[in-house]
Image (cartoon, rainbow, N blue to C red; front, side, top):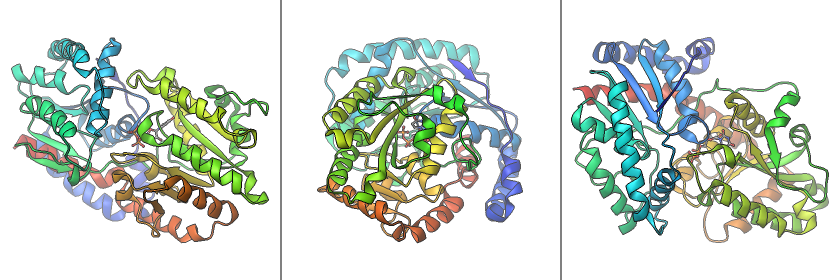
Length: 453
Ligand code: UDP
């Protein structure tokens, strides 16, 4: 385990913009008093498996800052076993939970259990009596459960993954977790449709964003040149490699995600190919930027490198004309704030944001684009259609022929923006009310208080 040190003041920003957050702040202060009485001075430990990349790492820093400012003792631990097989196993669990069949899982299981056993022993040295545990996702679940078996503590399992259908593969995974969940008091899921058979009470808390993080703040002026060193591109055979500045200064559609087959990056590339082949001359100017973490920097996602290479291959199969307009951008995860700034600036300057995931538990990248009031086009993957109401705050594309439909939306965006103006306004207002972190903290209080009672 490594501890991540988090500091900063977030609450003051909300208070300074009270006109947007009045009701949410009132509710936050009211519920905080009650929660402080119940939770008292016990330490709340959030435990997940990565400090960079992905939705959980995105949410925790400001969530932790806020809770500290509200008077709680909160700390953050990363469970990161050295063996590759550990993360191969948890990635297989992730895929299986989305009903993707994975071979060879049983061979990896012993590595996961062994690392978890070691993790449990380490927790004995870190966690004090009375501490409260919030365990995120499957990676640290078994280590925490084994520790809790002999050292009972109040504990919540916060699972960010979900799948709205029951299938034999999905049920098998929930059954596997079930054995370990007995040591917990409650489960938190992102949506009620993700509920599975369990005796534990389930609370629903959708993911949320911080309007004041480096990712979501408003950037003025050009990006500093230092950021250029933190991005790398797929090889561009037809143009000199661009700089981040060049990209930010151009017109482009954007997709942001980890390099993962479920994110539907191939579908965006196919849609863009169709768009360019039939585009009017003035639409030619709009490029495609696909941005994700440098796969070499992301230890908890062993498939990232392979999938990135698959995307590069897909690009090399495009015609010259299309290929030189597509940029696969790898962002170094070594500097968290710089990564956030690069993604934030790419989102802020995008002409439209696409998320065509095959499966999506929630999709914070869509929330971020909605919050920025960008035109947002998404697939009907469950988490995305939960956030986007077709025609109201964005566009939802349904199967089949999603690439054709996305290509058509690219046309509409490229030649004129007006359909999206009202939607973008609604998107931002809705996000301010329901997707900011302070709107979810009272729900966390409820869950923690219930776990303690
Ligand atoms: N993200 C990032 N850098 C990247 C790619 C993604 O900071 O290169 C962030 C993205 O902005 C979002 C999170 O990682 O906040 C991804 O969350 P999402 O729910 O979309 O997907 P997950 O990775 O959790 O499946």
